[in-house]
Image 1 (tube, one colour):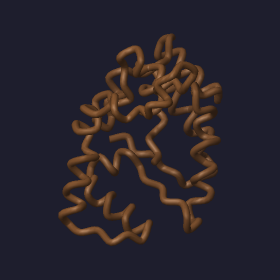
Image 2: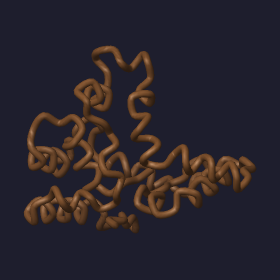
Image 3: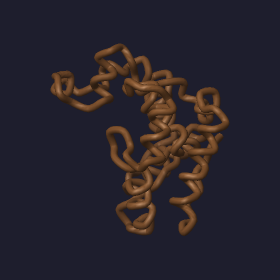
Amino acid sequence: MFANPFTVTSIHFTMAFPGSLQDVVNLMTDDAGYYSGPFFKHVLGYWKRRSYENILIIFYEEMKKDLSGHIKKIADFLDIEISDEEVSNLAKHFSFDSMKQKAEQMIPFHAKQDGHSATVEAAHKGKTMFNKGKAGSWKALFTPDMTKQMEEWESKWLKDYDLKFIYE
């Protein structure tokens, strides 16, 4: 699943990063990433292979608008027959509110030990990867200068690709 780079940056900041949002923006735009490595190298690796029969790209912002439709799309991609009732039940189960309520249960037991990912370490500190669940909420965090820095970085990486992120 792809989320736009602004959303990814704000998630890193609100979850686990010990510095400022500007520090995270600098890491991202310097292509250092935070814990997942350079963002665009990762994303474009999949984008270049999007026509492969075993790759399905979904955008977070589109999924937020139509969760049921995306459940059907994934089922179809996996060649799984699914009833409307099953789609409805899954949509309730995978809703933001439902997943946020179960955040603690979503960390595998073995991952609760020391030395695991930033996501797990953040959960130990009472933080969660479930922030607001609203597309575009990064806008409340970014200054105009940060937005410009991110836009220039994105333009540099995407100038030769038809990948267009969604921001609302």
